[in-house]
Image 1: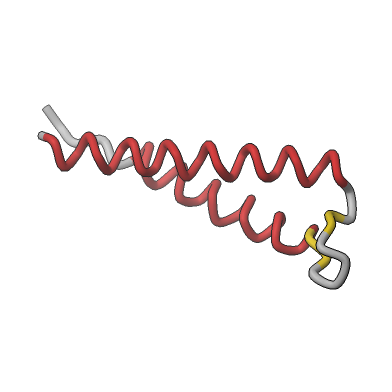
Image 2 (image 1 turned 60 degrees about the vertical axis):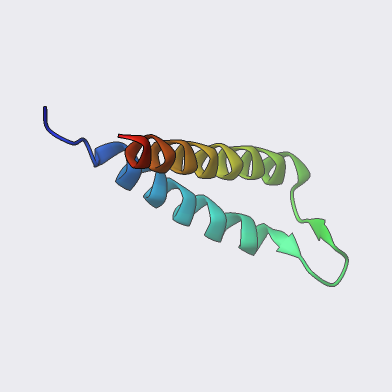
Amino acid sequence: MENKKGGTFFFAIIGIIVGTALWKQFDFKTMTFENVGLGIIYLVTFVLSIFFLIRNMARKEGK
């Protein structure tokens, strides 16, 4: 069977985009988010994309 690299690429792009948006939403002077609800959604999405990236990399190493 053929290796599917689409999932890894997809989650990497999602992680980069959402990580950049999360960085822009965070105020480092007050250590808070500008919009708390949006910041939480960005954070959850970013963590899940990193989780799936790591899981896909671990599965590829195991084969």
